[in-house]
Image (tube, rainbow, N blue to C red):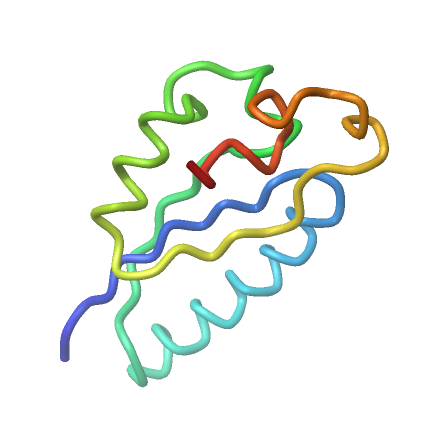
Length: 95
């Protein structure tokens, strides 16, 4: 059975809560032997500017390019409505 590499990008707001449920599904499929998934988690959205390393937008894009799939959670919100697009949370990976 092939192993599929998935990059999890929970984002901010409700994103981490939603991605926690996705992680339960991945664990279920792995545990039952129905599929084989390996995951990495990166920082995007409103959390990204507060962190270094894996939260760096360029590094996240490189890792995303090597993944079989990217699961992107919720990002942004009213707090960033007046911010230029390139500084908005949703611009973190979408370049």
